[in-house]
Amino acid sequence: MTHDFIHHFYLGVVESKKNGFSYVIKGIFLPADYKLKNNVMNERIIIFDTTLRDGEQVPGCQLNTIEKIEVAKQLEKLGVDVIEAGFPVSSPGDFNSVVEISKAVINPTICGLTRAVKKDIEVAADALKFAKRGRIHTGIGTSPYHIYQKLNSNPEEIIKRAVEAVKYAKRFVEDVEFYAEDAGRTDNEYLAYVVEAVISAGATVVNIPDTTGYCLPSVYGEKIAYLVNNVPNIDKAVISTHCHNDLGMATANTLSGVINGARQVEVTLNGLGERAGNTALEEVVMAIQSHKDMNFKTGIDSKQIMKTSKLVSTLMRMPVQANKAIVGRNAFAHSSGIHQDGVLKSRETYEIIDPADVGIKESSIVLTARSGRAALNHRLEVLGYNLNQKKLDHIYKNFLVLADSKKEINDEDLAVLVGHEKKEKRILKLDEFQVVCGKSCVPSATITVNYNGKIITESSTGVGPVDAAYSAINKIVPVEVILEEYLVQAITRGSDEIGKVHVQISYNDITYHGFGANIDILTASVWAYLDALSKVVQQYKKTPEKKQAYEVNTH
Image (cartoon, rainbow, N blue to C red; front, side):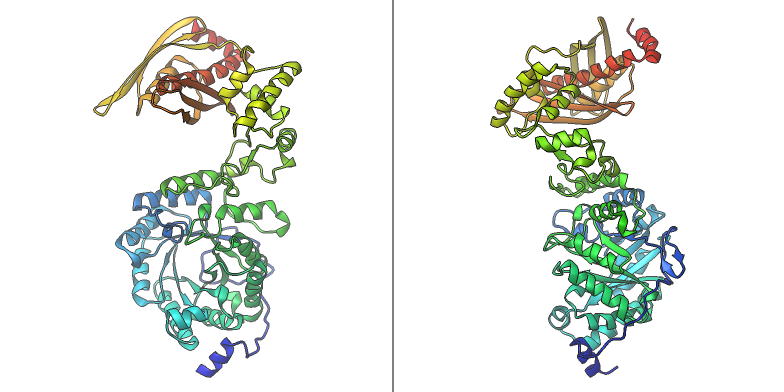
């Protein structure tokens, strides 16, 4: 092919022929449920997670090898199909991480990124030698910005280098993915020619990145459709999306790509990535799951999404914004009275996703000045208050006055509002409490509790003073509960002021809350735990089959 032809092709002068689009994929590992039917691909979308490569490029989000392995194992539980484990040639640490991840996980394909450079490819191949299924991801820039400015090259040379890189990678692995960097700003006809050339050279996946997040959803979808209809050998490879979020359209662009023929999506947890980030895995997966009319599916266990999100956020020290779709703490929180009333009556009124589907137990009803009686009564019942309508109306008036002066009403505020309204009599009361801890000793605690009129004392050790105290209490109380959350909510000004502790425990899949406030945060912690356990035991005692065991343990 002459340089003139390629030059004219790149400028969009040469006409392209349209071809049929089928999916007969060779040389690439496909998920078990990725089946062909009447020569048409099953609508299974391959999830390619690049949290450990593109996501880790965020300043301050670097992980060590042990942390990367922990994330990779969780990604495997989540059900991702491909894990891009790193850029092996970039550093010895990245190389070692790819090696160890390849050893640690079984089901996902492990992918290593390279440039269109032989040394990069050789190092990646070496790093992937222990992978059950390895993939080399190589590529080069194809937009005018990359060809002429970054690479100081020309269209003909770029295609030559792309083909050589794919052929060289093919010597080491069967599964080779090619990325056309900045494809979002690449002329479609030239891009089609590049894609055809690399597929002929052996590429099993062709990645069409919107590297700068420039494309509109319609434009990106048209680009994918153009490749589907104008690349003669497109049936020999899977088209992949890789979209950035610079204009806030990464998820929309990715879904547009899928609708128009892409069958692999490159994503990260929490949308982490260069600059404004990448397409968020959780958004694409739940969009596909919510819009069943699109007739797509993934292999993701959506109930693992929140757990995976929290792990990535914690290890990468990158908090998730409160209003982040799916995984933000406000994603299933309601503060408007109208919304709260609707959700309490029927979740579907204001929620298109069941929180349980992403690993969250329930929606959150946040009490503010915009909350109504239904939300207030709901929270009071959770805390153990059962009020008649007259008392509720009276408290609601005072609630609104207080709520106007505060951003959010907490459980302690509600206790004050209820005033002399008594909760159910507490079965567990703290009598004495002593804890020993320090740098050179094992934390231990001795707790004396008035358990339904009987004084019981127990001691225990733990990984910390709170753990030791809770372990001692667990010896006293014959109910096995799970501590779901321990939260030091606030400490008012000054080190000698009140510390507030909330705990959330579960028993038989029912959630119970406890609250404690004291100058001593450890005492507040014990009070909060006993407060929650009292509610459990109260219910426990009422259960006929448990009553005998309860009586045996307390008398």
